[in-house]
Amino acid sequence: MTLPNNKPEYLFNFGYLNLDKLLRLQQKPEPFTPGEPLFWNDPHISKQMLAAHLSQNTDLASRRQETIDATVRWLVDYLKLKIGQTVLDLGCGPGLYATRLAQQGLQLTGVDYSQNSIEYATRAADEMGLPIIYRYQDYLTITDTAQYDFALLIYGDYCPLNPEQRSQLLQNVLRALKPGGYFVLDVTTRAGRAKWEQKNCWYVVESGFWKPGPHLVLEEGFDYPEQDIYLDQSIVIEADGKLSVYRNWFQDFDQRSITAELTRAGLRADSLWNDLQGTPFSEGGDWIGVVAQKPF
Image (cartoon, rainbow, N blue to C red):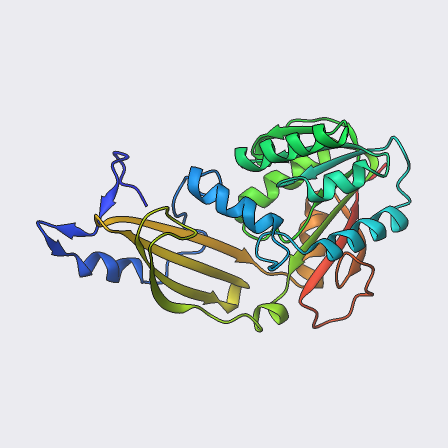
């Protein structure tokens, strides 16, 4: 969290702990109130995220290798992807899906707002001799026009966006796709959300995910059931009292709401699934996988 003059905010006033400030920060904020502006591209956090993307011990940032392999196999089979077709991988991270799809003979463009992940993906593609185009860019700003047969936004990347951002993204996707092109994404559900442990804890570490030095983390979850929204908030206090607030918002969906949102944007929900591995759709799943199509 930063003040309007861009100076960092601290928790101590004249040597005293400012508990009033902490109390204010622990109040339930309005939906999609932003936290730290530098987040996934933060020099330290981006390194932690890359490690999480590549880890086979957790699904924190990316799904495990076997799940990614199964997803790519299903996408190639279900969408009948052909050699030479063009694919736009939004939020591509270190290129885990793009690499596998390029190995199937598809022409890949990956877009991500983490410089660290893009650099890793570019090196990996060069080492494997794969002609993947990677761009360090916020996918809310892309202006590609009628270039792609398919676009992907995988592992719930749609859910942290606020309504205006989601609308902008869908317009960008619609513009980027060729007529008849497909958009594939997956979103979380309230049924799945109910299985998540709502955070309300604290811990101190010498070095951790949020900061390279010693810091205290106050974690709290806020639920907005009437709006199908959830906030995962971390207040981080460094040894010198510097204060940062990180907010991960999640918009959950059901069959009706995700279909309606895509329809309003001009995309047709071609099919719904319980994942992106071909599990037939049924109510009560943790995820909804969506294959949407741009009209011809």
